[in-house]
Image 1 (tube, one colour):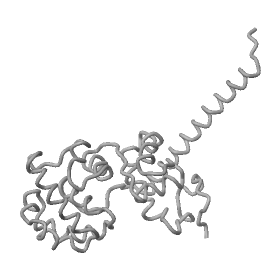
Image 2 (cartoon, one colour):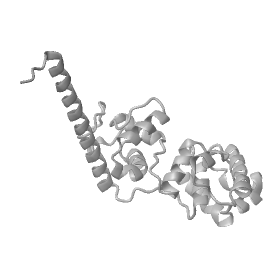
Image 3 (cartoon, one colour):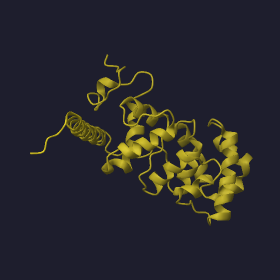
Image 4 (cartoon, one colour):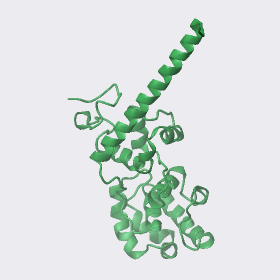
Length: 234
């Protein structure tokens, strides 16, 4: 009979405990996304678009702006110009007439003109499908690239905006001090089944339920699974 010393027993106990806690955390995360998927049966972007290019322009415009405000602007812009050549032909001043209701419109307009020129010169007017090529475009950072990879090209990327950053730290699904930390933890923690839809599930949950100032915890479908200490249950 093999005898085990106290150190060895403790090691085996904590190894088992670690595995058990890992399993329970995985089951909890799965339950969270199962409930969110039922509550949000159509997890899609609220930006209006009819092509990959239109989506790219809308996402660039959406930085520090509301989807509603962007949709209002693109409802006038896209019927007039919805290709790289057409928008480039408008010029910066012509484009500004359509997007001047959106915050930072001067910078965004200049970036969009550069972006259109790059698409025409380097990509035959098509939106590229790799992160490196997307992030090389003016006005396109990691978050915008992730949105395009996920929404346009069906890749399981998660673009961490203010809503996802807040929700992920509150529940928590992936704590982090910056968006990249949160993104990496979400990629690791989100059940594979829900990786493709996680981006929109978390955004919409943050936009309408887990809002910034007074989260609607009383009507939240995952309130009992959420570990946020300052729940608003009134």
